[in-house]
Structures are given as structure tokens and as C-alpha cells.
Image 1 (tube, rainbow, N blue to C red):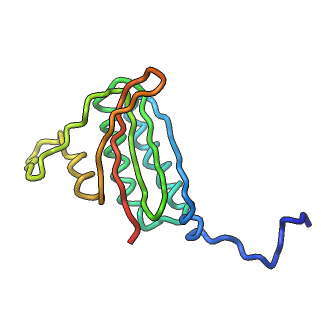
Image 2: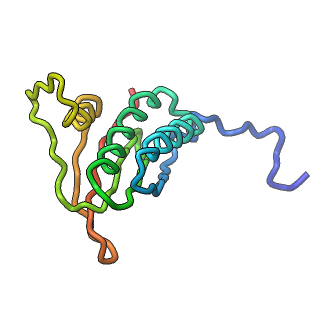
Image 3: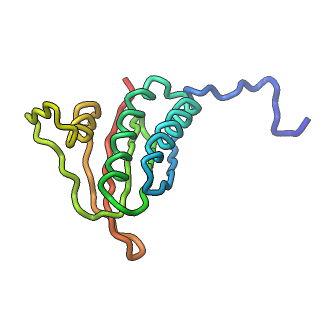
Length: 150
């Protein structure tokens, strides 16, 4: 038996793994199927990290952010998920530097499908926002939201 294996030492639980900071990034093409890939990848990450209670809401928020990145831009995009200090930050990067159009607090969407996604992000997250990004000569923006554990 290797020295670092100790059968009497308990395995670290999934819940305690969720306490350690971590981050994942998924680079995606400008393809509507990327939304499904992002949702399923996020579900797998959160399940393996022991954050089952956040899966449904996080999946909805990630789908909205990635959908906007794919639908309203022409270049590549990325999903970024970070866990630190009991807060899950979900964000989508895209190559368009223009700020997202967040709906007004009192917006009534009626039958209109445009604008609902960021309204859901605002309603279902504890905190959300966006920031312009410039890296290596590339421009774009990062739209993010946060969920905290109860």
C-alpha cells in the first residue's frame, strides 16, 4: 500500500469539497446547441462538488446568460463558474463590448420574448452585473450573477 493511502483516514465528503474555492471555464462556439452543453456541464460540476441545492437555479441562470451571449453576438463565448466563500458566481463572456440591455424593474413583458432572460437573472440571483473586458487585444464583456448557499 502506498504511504499516502491510509485506510483509517475518512474520505473527504462532497459537502466539504464544496467549501474549497474552485473555478471552471467552458469555451463555446456561437452555436445555439452551446446552451444545452453549458447547462449539462454546469449540472455535472455542481453535482460533483456537492452543491445539489443550487443546480436548478444555477442551470436556469447559466442558460439565460449563455443564450444571450450566443444569440446577440457573432463570435465565440465562454461560461465561467466560480465557487468561493459560499457564493457561486456564474458568468458568460462574449466578444461584443456593448453593455447588455437589462430590463427595467417594472417591465411587463406580456407576450414579448426579448428581455425576459436578464429579467430572470435579476429575479433569481442575489447579485448580478456586467463588466467590459479587454485582454490580449480582444474586447468583450462578462455578464455575471451570484447565488449563495442558504
